[in-house]
Length: 384
Length: 111
Image 1 (cartoon, rainbow over the protein chains, first blue to last red):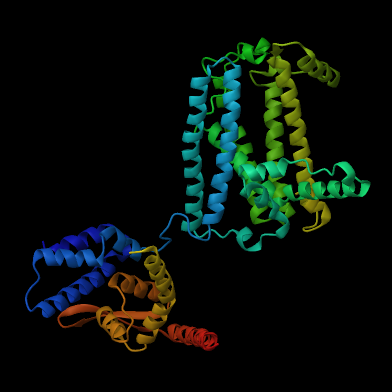
Image 2: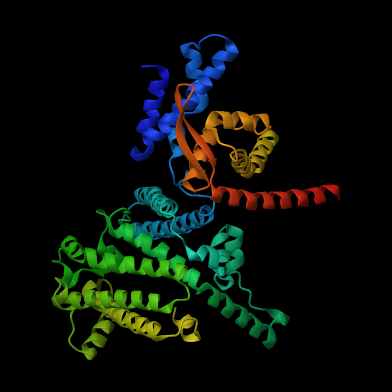
């Protein structure tokens, strides 16, 4: 077998089967022409070293095959890169915040500072790699399958404030952002105060724009899903931890098998989190189609209510957390928060499930409202 | 190579990228195979690497701008390319744009 044949076999192995024969025939012709041209210049046949140098000029088989293959030649293309970078930055910031909370909780629950700090750094490192990998995979899928994101072409100026808030996260910007801008001293007239109130309201309104909500839902939902499926490990309370040090007591929940409960809840909770991420994506792709958001809201709200109903009536927690009347719920809420530490976990769970049930009902109602609202109407925009 | 040379090289590549396609389409008004096309372009002052030219020819063919056929010449099978009717129309449009850009630059440079 000649060097050229060997080279062509390597290229062929990297090409799609249906085009292989055709491309290799053409490539072979090109290489033989090139060799003939070089040989006629030199007036003698090429040595093996010269042939190899010529094949190197043609290119490494991986590079040559990639040029012939269709599809993008990069994982994240230049059009998507700024969005990719922004999501990575925001996700890492969320991860750093979670690691900070985990550090505080671990120290409070009895860990010594060194191992707790090491654990927090581990969260940022391992989680960072997982998050960057996930965002990159999402970008690759968008590039590879040429998925069109209408937001990239039809973004709205009213949604851009989120980038102003999240884009310049350096110390000076943070200081500036949290600085008290209320007029003081002589400047503190009624008019100046009213003006300040107006600007604060405007800032809050911008922060709640569709893009801000969408990106926040994707980032938080994404981090939650990765944690829930075990790709991120925050391990807030570790083996050395102690609920008692956090001022909590398992009480009636002492005998619960938490890993069995998590197995039972795995798919429903994953579905709710995926629904929230989907709603974030829908806010970016279809910001002005309320029925899409409404449909997702109804599905997520109904799933949340079902999960809460199961926890309340049929789960291993039911006997410890269930109350049968509103007055009993009020009493238990008072018990949960008025007791002196250690706080009993069971009433806290009762309140937690009640709040989530209420949130589920509100979400279903909002979904129904969005389904009937006219696209672009004030009611629809306010509810989105 | 200094960073200034790198910058020049990258800007030059950017400038050439679009014009190579126009050059290839224009040269394929007359039927040619890859090797002779590359020679013709080089004679016109438009040097092009084989690794760029051959995948470009396939891409333009898959886009319907070129048609090709395998024929034997000099005891070797060769793939001959020429402009398709769609390619002709596309070339006319691109040439119109090219001339407009060229005229604009001429006006700017004359100032």
